[in-house]
Amino acid sequence: MVSSPPKLVPQVDVRRAGDRKHTELEWLSSRHSFSFGRHFDPSNTHFGLLLVSNDDVVKPGMGCETHPHRDMEIVTWVLEGSLVHEDSKGNLGVIYPGLAQRMSAGTGIKHSEKNDSWRLDGEPHDQDVHFVQMWMPADTRSIDPSYQQRDINAELGPVDAGSGELVVVASGMEAHRDRSAISIGHQHAALHAARLQPGASVDVPAAAFVHLYVARGAVDLEDTGPLDTGDAARLTAAGGQRITAASGGAEVLVWEMAARLTTPQ
Image (cartoon, rainbow, N blue to C red; front, side, top):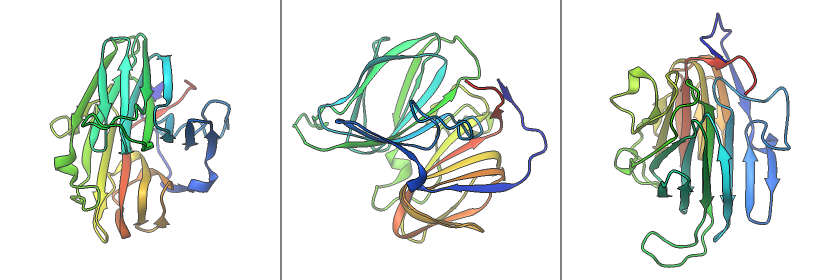
């Protein structure tokens, strides 16, 4: 169940990269911001509406074989390399840096995700694929499964010289409908991304719940301090703070959420 929050106490909860649980397999290195799989912590099951935020590295030619999902909105953001998505509804896509991608599982869908070890130009490569995958429940259960993707590199700017703008990647919020690259099946959630050159700043959205994740580089969060690669800040009844990229620049992912989960999923 999802509810609009009652009176909230403003706070910022910083979670350091090194404190995340880690799954290490022959083909996968995955670091979990929340409980995931065998790594269960009843005090860290979600924040706001966000259930999963996994930072994954997959080796060439390997990946997740076909597996099912239901009633979940899944957004994948690639940082390096390319990931091939294929699902039981006939959707086939290559996800690369700057491509907004979302799968709505709805009544049920099966998909695979693999580093196919081929570049977009058709030549083989030996590059790992590095991506962040984020899950939240849909606000309406048992919808028809769907898939959407869109390249937003023009808005973000180059990886090494970003535009410095906070770009709406995916949203179900009415306020962002005209600016969102792709839709997401929750009316109380929006995902933003920014590629920041050294010293560049953006303001975190003001919302009941904001999850700020430093995907690469480092930033300084106003009134909180430095956040390094893999660190996250969970902001309750806050937002509006300024984040400023450190000397090496940064790429950040920011969830803006106007509601929270009140029962386990």
